[in-house]
Figure 1 (cartoon, rainbow, N blue to C red):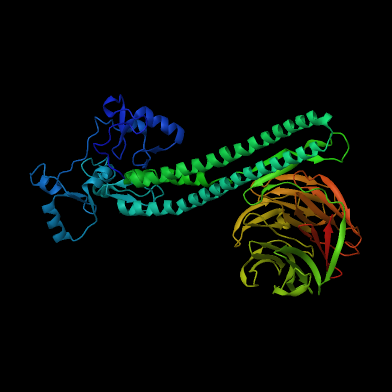
Figure 2 (cartoon, one colour):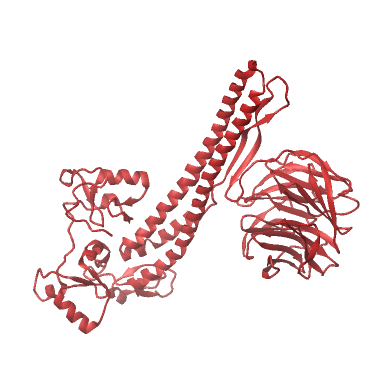
Length: 615
């Protein structure tokens, strides 16, 4: 911390000379500023920061001393003063003995007591408010020296004679103020890492949104270029209408951009700034405040940290985003601005716009497998297939990028019901009386596993991995259980729409899952942070497999049908149906997966995995 010197001649904010200041206040660092400037800066930044030394203080501005009434700490040797020798300047301060010492008494101190931690008198002056003894309110001649870890009360040595139990009736857990503050600081430091982690996530989101805005501007420019190119192909008489369309597009896109900028600056930037400000206040409190104040305000500090860490990271959903649709080559205006598309913005998936509607399926190839296949997922060119030869002989095999069943990947012992790959880890839901979730790395090494509670009556269940959380249905209790990636239960989401029958599930972004329930003939989307059902569809009779890609939800059903239903991920509205006769020939399809323009369908009964091109 920088010490105020005679070199400071003006307020650090308004640069008014010190002698001309009408109402000046001195910060704990001894720098002097206008009260009006301090209050104005605090109103904007919500923290007290000295513009000279950049230190942050957790203080009440109105209670700060004025520069002309502030009494500096005594800098005389305490040993000399006790012997009647006044005004002997001290050269060092012993933090262990809380004593100021001149050069002579420092030598005798070191000879008798050994090396104690010392600070210079310059540092002592800046820290005097924190280092000065605080007198007991009951025994006014004695300083506070002890504190209770349980009830966080302070007392002096005289208080020991009348000491009562803690408020809960148990004996006090006494320790020195220094020991107590050290222990309390460790607790705050442990939670400080969570604040920093939240700051990092918000910083990442802020950087991400900067990139999204750049991409958005680039996309807008591309659309304008498309508009110009189409306009130039039309006859001269309709150029004015193209100009009108351009203005309409720019205006609509500008409104969306304003929403993006608002989200970036207000929802993300402000939250990051607010979190940073509160963290600096908390750190300043433990750095500059007196030990007694730290103890007295510890409960407030912990509640403040918990409140800062509560809630979810900000997300943004946009609807009615303007795009272009170019129609034909007639000598008329065949370009129009449309707002039928919806986009979602989040940290993991970015800005996603649904692809054009699929119209048909073309079978690429069928890969035979050795037994019943229940689930598939694709990752970095490989397709992972869950197989079951009998109830207790489950395993996961790999179909490579050449569409060859290359090898057995892992054996799991029970019945494989679902496979999913997330961040280079394979998550497998296995019925093994009860359910077990196994986690392997991509070499097949077992990383961890845990037990999941759900009844089993021969009906398949599944899992989904959403933003570092594993979501699995608990059909018996009509809820979704949310786990961490290592198996700790985070929460249970009540889900009355669940039945005890076949359930399929897929992640659709970093916030939600889509669930299909065979018995109720319902497909529904659940927001994991809020637990709310965002939409429900009953367009698919007896739905089984479900997956997500490009803003669309793809669903198969139990009946002997050749169709795949396509739903809008934002509304659940049925968009189209695509079909191929090979999808169903009396074979259940409990799962499916889309990667790029390829639909992967596991056929349970006849031991095949079908690969389709989506056109």
